[in-house]
Length: 137
Length: 305
Ligand SMILES: [Zn+2]
Image (cartoon, rainbow over all chains, first blue to last red; front, top):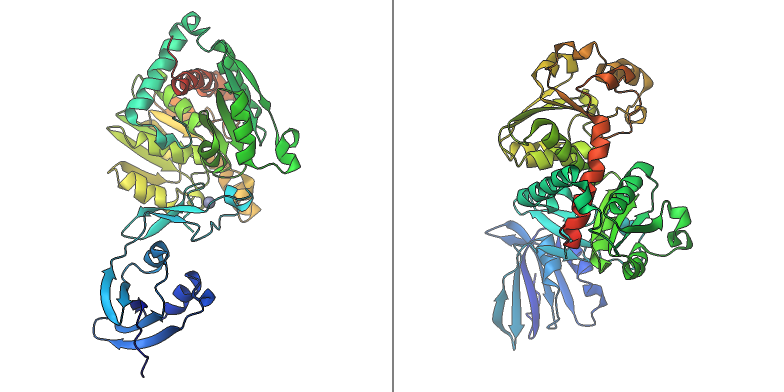
């Protein structure tokens, strides 16, 4: 299978197989006019199988969203057909408006215009808690 | 600016300072009778709780301050759809400090992000109730003279009881603490409290189902209510409820200097006959609640006598 390499844009590599579509949705890549390639189940010596996303435009990307979904993704910035930067991402300390608290007793379910904020409370187990009610989902 | 939203917002040192101030207030009431002159406490009770609200209001009055506020959501502007954030922004124009109770978890946290004056969480649903924890700690300190080297029995509904969870977190920071967790299997302490608090701090603990088996070992017995609606069926409730009711017969093997605490209100988990036992501390606990709130208000307002 062949996908044209991009001239100016971003390649997200080493995505856990099956997660590319979630990233496509959560980063709102469907709103872009440029071409975006979702490549599923690519053979990888390191991971067995992986997904890759190619975006044919250098967009301002919310790295916290990526870090939250999968901190092991490689972010490659391409300019004039060449790799000019590899961005390192990590598990973000705080998630702001990335996910919604699902605790029905939480103030965020009724208060208008409130920011949804989660904070990382356990890095090993990747547990985030709502800063308001402390629920972890 | 400092708020009190979660009991763990306070360091051990800050808690000790507040408790020591409360003890001084108890001994020298006159000295503190005008400390808050010209200051106003707003009690914003979106959920009614007469005892807690009166305790805050009495505390402010004894410091020479004034109080204003509302006692239920129906009598507040939230019934017209105003957000908690807006209510707090407006009230912080009128008051120097706010005590807030809300049925939604995290409402006081949100309030602290919007307010220009200190916010005290006076209970947010099943989540936190830090002034109850301070009350419990002051009671233990007054009765025992220390917060370390104690065997503490926590009895009843340990799964949903927020006062129990907060007290465990607070006491886990002191030396020589041992917990005996007394509850039916259905209402055991949640996993995250056991692993993230008790085991993480290397605290000795045991989980048992019978109060009578362990009551003789205890320095403190902290009773909570076993609520009918927590059980899947009526038969289990009926079978279990009596095991968690404290009466004089169960106290026969208890230490003579045991202190019995209960956050109140009680329903029937402590028999009325126990009230006359010198080991019953739960009404003294309610009084301590006022003194510790006086100390807290002074501390958050940065006032000294
Ligand atoms: Zn929440």
